[in-house]
Length: 154
Image (cartoon, rainbow, N blue to C red):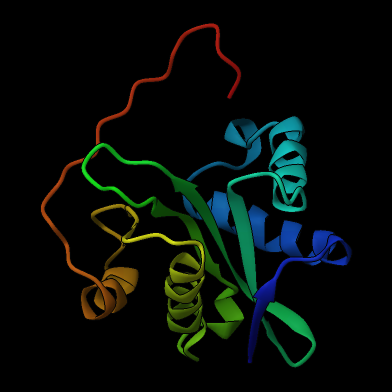
């Protein structure tokens, strides 16, 4: 398995993983993300000026997983922090260390970018993933709240 930056030629394979990731979180059919969001997200990943990065796991010549990160400032730290926004493994590749390899690569990329911390969130009932997360990071007890702003684009 090889972890690398996403490349422009990866769009179709990445999009299949992206679609699976979104379906896992209930964003499919009538609740699917608008195509404009997917296109804008992809454009950000291939724009070197953006603070968003996409890593992919490649196994046997095919993409097996993805990790998307956003680097940003924090009020509680002098150095930037890294938010692991999306992590997904192709269901056929689960249990083979793909997610662990992607997380390790995110840690390394965050160090390279001068970040002092990597953090992420998941649903409380995502027990399979949480078994891994409990091994590679600390759950610090925070609960996430969000509020969609009316009139804003998704």
